[in-house]
Image (cartoon, rainbow, N blue to C red; front, side, top):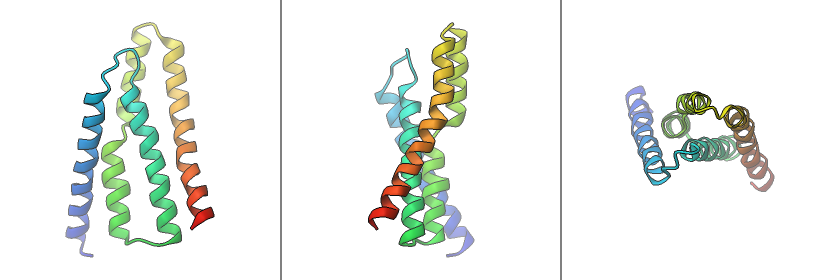
Length: 124
């Protein structure tokens, strides 16, 4: 696939990821905890694990893999939002919750990537 088509695929799937993230943000407006970001990061990590495992066992085109991982998952997941929301929790005096969020998100994200990789490799 040409570099231009590959770029357009990443951009189109990135837009789809951003729109999904926006929908999640607007549907989960809980100001006491940033649930939408946590859900986006964990489900995005899980999806990245599924894509990675499927691509490595069944194979998909490099362009589609880039479109899904860099485009969709990149547009959908939100490290910058997680860190800003952690700072906001600290500013509100909720330091323990902020630390739990900062430590728990990457650890749970790692688990959400590893789980589908193990499952897909086991069953495909």
